[in-house]
Length: 117
Image (cartoon, rainbow, N blue to C red; front, side, top):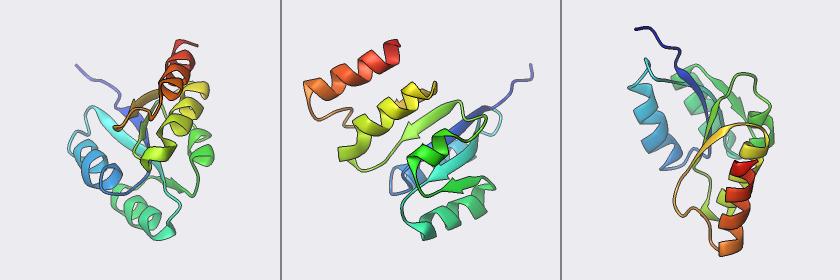
C-alpha cells in the first residue's frame, strides 16, 4: 500500500522541535515529510533546512502560508503554544502541540474552540 507522507511544519527548532520531532520524522519518511520549519534564530533555520531539504521561515505566520503543510507541530517556547496552535488551527492545519498544552483554562478553551471550528 502506497501512502503520501503527511507534509509537516515545525514551529520552533529548539530541543523539542529539532531534537525530538524533526529527528523522529526524519526516520519515518513513508509517513511524514518535513515541508517547512520556522524559528526566530536564523542559524537554527539554516541548519535544519539544509539537513532536511525543506523550506525555512523566520515566523510562524510565514510557515502557515506554506502550500501543502497539513500538520503543524508547535514546539515553540511554552508561552506561545496557545497562540501558535490557534493560528495553525485557524489556517486549517492539524496541530500537535508540545506540553504544556496551555497555561490557563482560557488558553485551553480557546484552543479547543479553534479546533472545533
